[in-house]
Image (tube, rainbow, N blue to C red; front, top):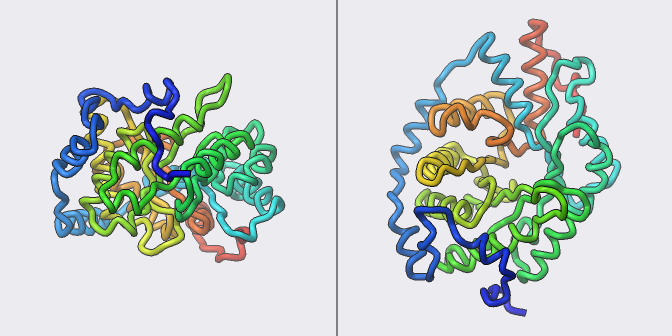
Amino acid sequence: MTHVLDPDALPDEARALMAPPPPYDDVTRSDAAFRAFLHGLPGVDQVGAEARVAMLGTRSIKTTAKAWAIDTAISMVDLTTLEGADTPGKVRSLATKAKRPDPGDPTAPQVAAVCIYGDLAGVAVETLAGTGIHVAAVATAFPSGRASRAVKIADVQDAVANGADEIDMVIDRGAFLSGRYLDVFEEIVAVKEACARPGQDPAHLKVILETGELVTLDNVRRASWLAMLAGGDFIKTSTGKISPAATLPVCLVMLEAVRDFRAATGRQIGVKPAGGIRTTKDAMKHLVLVNETAGPDWLTPDWFRLGASSLLNDLLLQRQKLRTGHYSGPDYVTVD
């Protein structure tokens, strides 16, 4: 079976999805047109991007503002476990922590989602019933993306059938780096179609760019626009399985992309940095970057997420320090 989807095999609904929103509804008419558009995007000044994030990283957040920022960051966490040794018991434990991050403090907010492998989505759905916490499942041969289109679609459909209401897919980086942009676009469209849920809204689609393999910030901008034009609901930096993962310059470029995309089309897209965000200080830097780049409209879990496993514990420790005046140490929180 060929890895490249034959456009003639797409159902009518998927063909409708393939049309990007105005004023970009004509850019995917051919490989040449799509390449011209993506390579016509403004280039990224890497030195300038690094200088801007360094400057924003010096912002000091204290007292009331810090308390708000910590709670906001907790509410944005996609609490994640993506290990081959994951078990139903571990997922239940993670989901329980997602509901009540600090068992000793019921005022601590719950997280946005639990992110797991699709075969365990049903366990998380059962544990999280009635909480409003989302169940995100990685799919499309995560983390490598090395599988046939049919296998990737089956992976997504299986996760959705298990109850996942968010799908984190990986793009085919080999196709992207080879310049086969239309192939990558069509695959995202096909995955979006596979997110359909009869009688419900489709599962939200987060498109993982794996920016550490894209080499340049220019490629990050092109991949961001490609994913948004294909119908992704979120663009996500990384799988968390390679280094570098989420970096502030990369996040800056992605935030600029969603800001400019909304200005042009009226459609708002979310951003999810993931991988390597471990401390409250890391989270604060990202929140400042969001506010100063995309704007406060993105400062909610609907539009910004932090993919992490260890971050939540540090946020809880810092939260307790603000409330009590002392730092309890790592034994205060549960170990994932």
